[in-house]
Image 1 (cartoon, helix red, strand yellow):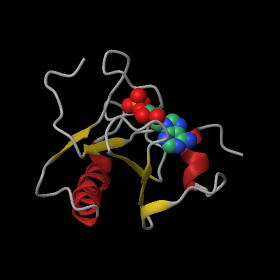
Image 2 (image 1 turned 45 degrees about the vertical axis):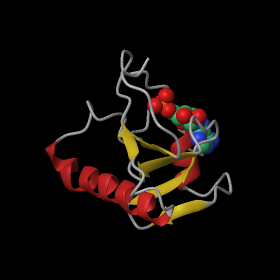
Image 3 (image 1 turned 120 degrees about the vertical axis):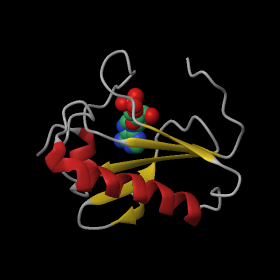
Length: 114
Ligand code: AMP
C-alpha cells in the first residue's frame, strides 16, 4: 500500500469521485475547500513537487495545466475566472508532497495570497 495519500487516491483505495480521470492525470474535490470550487489536479506519477520535477515531466505538467482548464470549463467557471496554484516546498505552503495544482473559483480571490 502506498504511503502517499494522493498515490492512494490515484490507486482508487479511498473511493474518490473523480471529475476527470485519464491514464496520466486525475482531478478531484479538495477535502477542505477554500472556495466554492476547489479542485485538485494531480499526475498519477508520484512527483514530489514542481521543484523536484524535471524536463522529462514537461509534457505531464502541461497535461496537468490543460486538465485544470478543462475542469474549469466543465464546472462553468471559465468565464467568471479562476486561479491555478501549485504550492511548492516549505515557503510555498506545500503540505502534501505529491505535486498537485489547486483550481480555485466561485468567488473573487484576494491578492496577494497569505
Ligand atoms: P497543499 O497545502 O498545497 O499541499 O495542499 C494540499 C491539499 O490537499 C489541501 O488543500 C488539503 O485539503 C488537500 N487534501 C489532503 N488530503 C486530501 C484528500 N484525502 N482528499 C482531498 N484533498 C485532500
